[in-house]
Length: 297
Image (cartoon, rainbow, N blue to C red):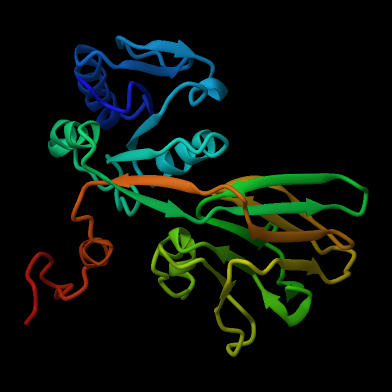
């Protein structure tokens, strides 16, 4: 098969039975098509693939196919970020805002992509930098969100936010979500944040259970740096997660900055991909919740 994608990396959670079989089918199909397929050494499934260390999966691959849910897509984005390798998602999760190809359509969809029939979807990536009072610095990248959240079961956390050096507000509550358009349909949505069209370069600042009801979400340009500082209290601590992964603890004297990364994540979709159609399907827009599947007039 003559295709621009001659080396494909497969990623997926092998412990999920819904993932294992599609991965076998796809690996066999790609191998028979003369395409080199790589997978992580930790993947123990019996597949006709070349095994490499996880951190080397995208060294030579010019396409990543992620089989699973949105969590698998986030994992794939971390692998693909440095080299800008595009990602194609096969949905085996629950919602699937990112992985939009169904297992029944997997082979025909991959055939179209290999034939060059696809559209590119460039997504904003956030860079989070935690600078502690002790001089330690931690940097992590996220496709969905950067979350500051109170630690343990204690009281609220108090923190201030600034955007591009301008003071915004002092917040009291459970924390704050800095969400990309991609992440606007994730945790931020459950906290009352807005849905942002993926092609907008914007970040939503969404308070988590704010003590003051007037502390509302706000959307800012992605070009502006966000600074979050915890107010000084002896017992104040907040956990920082990026795409659900813990990167550190924010304490008095520490600073968390969030800004647009220089890299972006590229997703591939089939022609006719419809973001609003996905919203209607996943969020049951236009349907009577008492009669799922029946559209209202």
